[in-house]
Length: 316
Image (cartoon, rainbow, N blue to C red; front, side, top):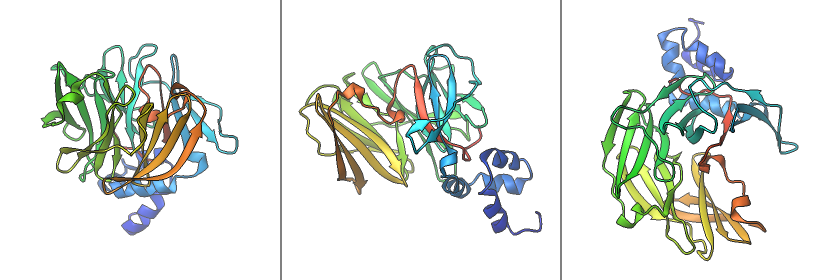
C-alpha cells in the first residue's frame, strides 16, 4: 500500500464500510489526515447512498434501535438494539441535531448536551460547571455544523430571563465561547418556538414561529464564517391557521416543508435561492396538524428518531 499513489488509496478507502474507515485511521499519520478531511467524508457519503445503507435510528421509552428501510413497502426492517453508552433514564434522550452521522442529544433528567457517534458509540458531555452546555426544552435552540478547518461545532442559543445569549462549542478545542446575538425584542416571548438548526452551504438555518394563528414566522440564519446572525422572510404561506416549517438540506440546497391550515392541511415544498423562496409543489391532506409525521429533526420531547446512514462520521 505504501507504494500506491495517495489518489488510489483515496479511491479504495472511499468504497469500504464506515467501520473499516474508522479502523484505517489508526494505520499511520498520513491515512489519519486523509480520512479526516471533509472531501473524504463527502465522497464516502455519496458512494454509500445505496438502499442497503439507509437506516433509521429510533429512541423510545425503553430502547434505542436501528432499522433498515424497505423502500418497496415503505416500511422498516427488523431492528437491531443499540446500547446507549452513557447513563440515562427512561424517556431521557432527545435528539436535537445531526450532521455526518454525529448527533447532538440532550439528557432530559439533567438537561446536559452530549455529542454522540452511534456508529462508534463514542460520546462526549458538553456541560460545564458554570452551566454552559445545559439545554432547556422549548426555550433553547441547537445546531451542529463544521467549519472550513473540519472542526465540528455546536451553536447553542439560550433564552433566559428575558435575554438571548448564544454560545459556540468547538470539538477541536473542547471549549465554549460566547458570541454576539442580536434579534428583535418580541422574539424573547415564550410564544416563539425555535426549530433545530439545519446546516447548508456555510449557514445554519432556524425557523422561529409564533404559536398562534396569524403569528409572526421568520427564518434566522447564522453565517459560520462571520459568526453573524440575520433574519430572512418565511415562505409566503397563508397565516389563517396553524403554520409550521421544517427545514431539510437536499444536496446542499435548503428546502422547507411549510404546513398551513387546521382541519384541511396544506404542505408546500419550497427551496431557497439567494434569500428568496421558490415553491416546488403542494400536498393537500385532510388531517389535523398533530397527526402529520414531520421530519425527525423537528421532534422535541422524550422520544427521538433520526435518519442515519452507515457512512463515515467524525470521531469524538
